[in-house]
Image 1 (cartoon, rainbow, N blue to C red):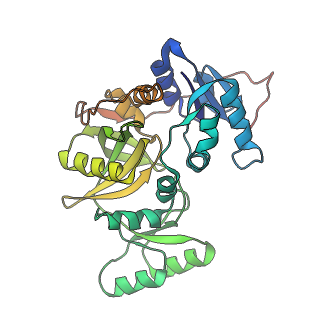
Image 2: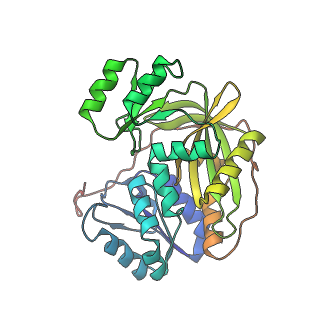
Amino acid sequence: MNILILSAGTRNKIVQYFKEAVGDGGKVIATDCSNLAPAIYDADAFYLVPRITSPGYLDCILDICKSNKIGGIFSLIDPELSLLAAEKEQFLAAGTVPVISPAVIVETCFDKFAMFNLLKKMSIPTGKCYVRKEDFYHDVAAGIIDYPVFVKPVKGSASININQVTAKEEIEVLFARYDDLMIQEYMDGTEYGADVYIDMISGKCTSIFLKKKLKMRAGETDKSVSVQNESLFNLIKNFVESCGFCGMIDIDIFDINGEYYISEVNPRFGGGYPHAHACGIDIPSQVINNLEGRENPVKIGDYQTGIAMMKYNEIAITDMNETGIVL
């Protein structure tokens, strides 16, 4: 089984995990638009490709799939997930299975107001959201919500252009400067992250790994500790199975006075997945099982609690004299 990892970037661990899962029975190939993406050098082979927005990008990736007999493909960045989901049939026709949830739920994940409405419809607690600032001002006056709040793009990722604001004047400045913004309730509570796998054959949630976030940096979990919680397991399982998610997803959750609020859902590997993997939650092997036609058993909560993750900096050094640098 050959696997193609798109936009590998700095996610060296993901490449390494898939090489372990594939073993001698296949290869792991990576792509990126820059040869300064360290993760590509951990792959069995790599391709430098145009940027996602470039004309012909899809054809380029399809050619790589065909020429390398790629069995499964996934991406590590948000903008590419929409492409994989929307063009799933083209990949299947090339003999490659995109490891991605259905397009409609992928787009819902990337539209924070749409996700807010979906969670409300499912009666799952989540932070209040407003796309009309006038509706927010009305609820402030009614005592339904108060400052501080977050102002962020309705569609966005990687914590880009997110601002915590404490006054109406700040909201007016941001809404005048940028389009397609929303106001989101500030959730003050204990934050958890969940690394989840939904079997691509059975549709069942087979793995959930919960971590209590201890420290964040640049929107990603910097330090965390493994925990278990049956109420959260049940909430997550019912949510992902009801929505029809597929493959690996990452969920952010807040515990506010004993009630669990889903904050954000990312239909891909989260930045903190190495914590789950180190605790025995082997999602790459589950992906390979599915691609080879095998269902995975349900093993929710099959890991030890009290195991801490601490991220630290590492570097990769390579000689670029012959190839030159591609940014």
